[in-house]
Length: 204
Image (tube, rainbow, N blue to C red; front, side):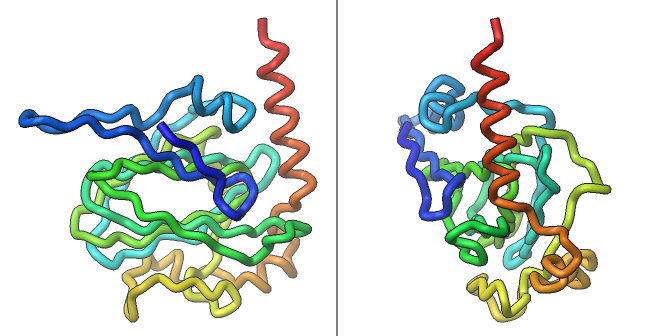
């Protein structure tokens, strides 16, 4: 398994070794020991989500307030998608930037996003199925969305007419989220991440 840091701090691409033969394939898509050695703390799994999307469906851009935020480890179980990490953290040198990774059921890559980072994806095939390992349970009062087509984000979704949910289509802009004081702060994100690491290091 190879874990590669992306250009946005706190985001990683994970590429497993896929073993295949006439029966099919096998891959370790998550290893707590390797993850901890690279990231600095174990992934707390409080909730596992699964979604299925038709081709050209775009979901996002979503994030949760920090603390505690919600870190995500995302894998594609069927089909293919382009997964996007968006830096929404005020004070970050890469604020407003995004990076994408292709996830599919062949290479079995995953992407990890730490607390405070925005997340979205576009399905490349019909019946694209993904799993999210989440560090905290869903809390609707602390989760927010930005319209994925907001020109200030400048995300190239690779499709002229993406299919959006009513919630995402009506979501606020990046500027509106900033004006309302909803965007996460880099210092708060780093501090919370350090507290998680410290708590894990003091466990018996």
